[in-house]
Image (cartoon, rainbow, N blue to C red; front, side, top):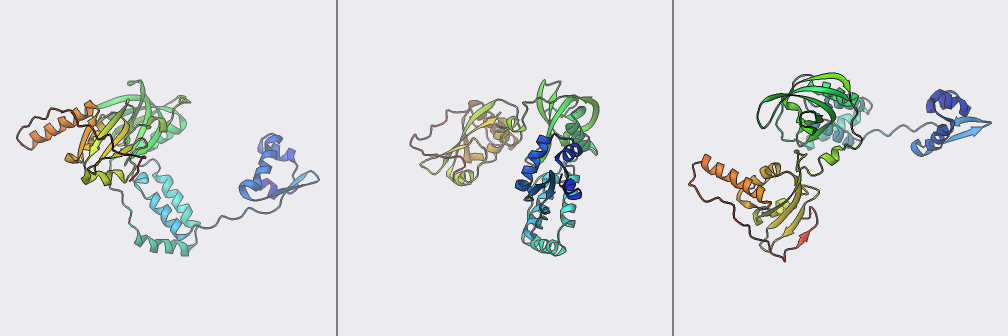
Length: 333
């Protein structure tokens, strides 16, 4: 519309509506929004519309902004195999070429003062797989995939309706409705060995939401029933745990000895169990009983693996925390 107003000063509303294939009512609304959105007023004279000025050119990026953009576009999110890798590289080239050379040079100098590295294993994606999946998600095309299962390590074939591509922790996943599972499941892209676009269209459910799917996810795994988890951390690690908001539902209670009680609601128990095990003797699961038993099973296996003397590792009844312990807001230090 701006181009029409610029090239045909005095253009009537009927011509604007016809050229843009919109109703006059829509054109009137767009004209009133021009000054609010772009800061360019429009005036009318003898039934014709004119631009009162030209849109301001956007201010060039500062060297610090250029540095931030380049760092973001080089992150693991856009690493080799990412569905967005080509788009990220193209976006950066457009930003770079539109920026004054001196600011690009300054941004390069500033980069020596920052070091950003995400420690993450590099997956080996089959060539072409991300692009086929990305196109199918956009076009709503059904896929046939060949997938290596994590639990059984078997290679299986599935027919799926792809809903969304998501990035969690350090990997890309496909959320898709599986005909075999009869529900939405997540497939790690690095485990997809082959993919075929069937060309068959499907209609994604209007009520599907990626945020809802991962609402109770600890980090990556989702789709299981929510479970209330309670863990007691020793004073040696309590400050480190409390200084970070690890989950939207978490609550932290201080204990008289300097330890904390960490409570959270998550999807299933297996993923959070791996996190808890990383703290060894500094963490004790108080509930649920199934998670406590799972931790004990891992401890038994480790004791056997390292040839340690056998001990009675039957889960005991955990001591209850003091009722006088104070409740902290989510993520409070």
